[in-house]
Image (cartoon, rainbow, N blue to C red; front, side, top):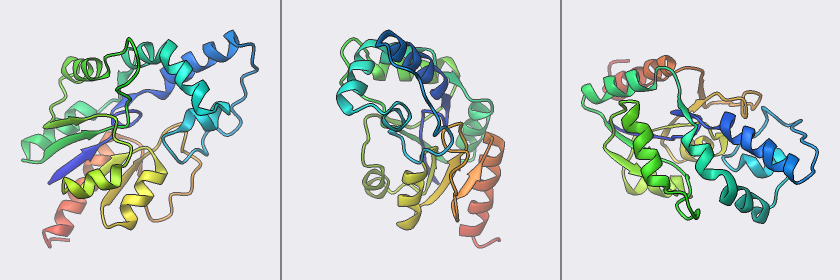
Length: 203
């Protein structure tokens, strides 16, 4: 199978470092930090929702701290082992992320490839700054999406692409309805294997 995997808060913990620097940015600006909607955010543009930023403010934050955020991301337990096991089964692994490529002083591709290499995570392609994931999945004929954005999972599921929602501190209270929610990479592996049996007519 061709498996599409998000990076931020699906393969690596990103929210932790994003919030660390987001709080620093807000305090430097003299703003009170108020995150009352934690757990209810459905999409990957969570900084706007979390802090009430407009795009101008968000990109000013990225200019100052995006490099720090990406360099401090740590791998989620189980990601390496499960992805390696899927590769051994003959699946192809395609990282599909909205990570930005246009931030001055931040070489996103180099940082991301280094993170994957340092953690021994195998992959077939790295696709950065993908804003329209549905089109990407359809054009590249990917079979499964592993993602932390409910909105992305919802869109892909509605268009016939199997989607698995990774639970994070941003989305844990979102009603996932008929989208499969998981908490660990071990659960992701079980869900993929169940889907594999289903499409092979063995369920």
